[in-house]
Length: 295
Image 1 (cartoon, helix red, strand yellow):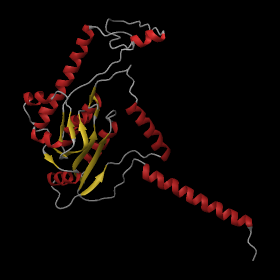
Image 2: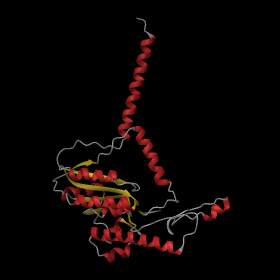
Image 3: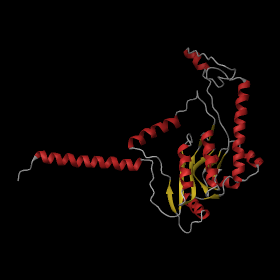
């Protein structure tokens, strides 16, 4: 029987389309930021806090989801972050404190849990770090750029019209005055004290003891344990076991990771690019107040 080339062509095209669509579906499942869970019974919920902390909304939503789920008996915060914005860090910290009123919350440190990353953890009942985790960096930073000399060289002139003496404080067009530096330092000192109080309250340490080490220095996890910033040394699995025990779970606990927003493959790539640009390219003309460890 003679084979019809048209039918053969249609079959080949159909196979190619099926393979192509299957590949798209597979990649979408691999790269989407959703971690499905079908586990029933008593569970430990894990909320991942990674990278620079710039937006608190998703993390707060994830914490709330586990706090309201009666099947989740304890929450683990898996933190691998150098910190980030003051506001975002404080918002997450506040939500962790609220979740603790409902069920145990334990923090697990990965490679880095510094500054705002550590601030967030202070709301947890216990903190577990690897011996070599980089943590601490209790401090505040605000950065400005003075481009006045550069602008002179290229012939650029900027003009500022303002309603008050300090409205353009930190402008890159001119040198900062002594009075302006003092004003900004007062803001930084106040926010720094907020950080110190959060650590002292969360870790149940004397305010003076925290203040003595809150000069921005970093600690290895082992050192942090010695000064009271960390409770135990261990990895994520150890932390899950501790959380399960605190939540009254017998035996090896079932673990569920937070369900992120559904996203397409295109969303994944565009969001990843945007996130990298936001982290790597900092606009020095628009400084922010940060709890962040900067290498």
